[in-house]
Image 1 (cartoon, one colour):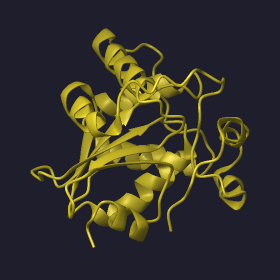
Image 2 (spheres, rainbow, N blue to C red):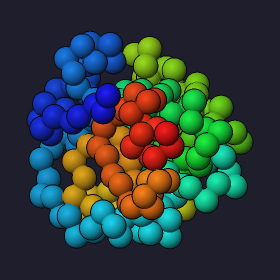
Image 3 (cartoon, rainbow, N blue to C red):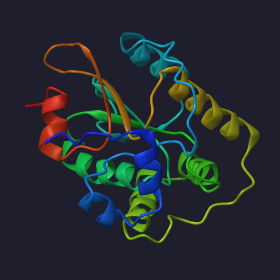
Image 4 (cartoon, one colour):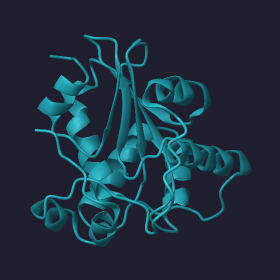
Length: 200
């Protein structure tokens, strides 16, 4: 089933809840802590090309695949951890590019930087998300971020805002069956994600 998002203020209240409790409440996405005007200047059809050109992330899955799935995530979002977990069975079929954004709290950018610069980002993400889902805050990360990485995370976040997106995880992909650009805000179970991506 597809997990839907709730209004931004409801998501804010969920951000500090343990993951299991948040799922029990039916919350499947994390939103910025404060209301911001939704710009929405980037149309969904243009978002795919924009992320391919200007986004910064790390690859998980079939590296040589022409079918790329972009996932914008905040490292402090437990729902992003859930999507990471549910995407694992699909890694032999598509290439996921995980792009960190920063809005939940002060740990978001340093953890995003640590993931982007890790020797093995997939292994680092596995460890990080296991900690997030366990409610222990994620992996430790230095608050000293290289300028180029800080700029890349800021650019990812600016693109996220320009798309008018209100919560993470945010998926931008081309459906493998139809070729159409598809977007989704919120986590999904594996079967729903496969169907959404046209992999069935």
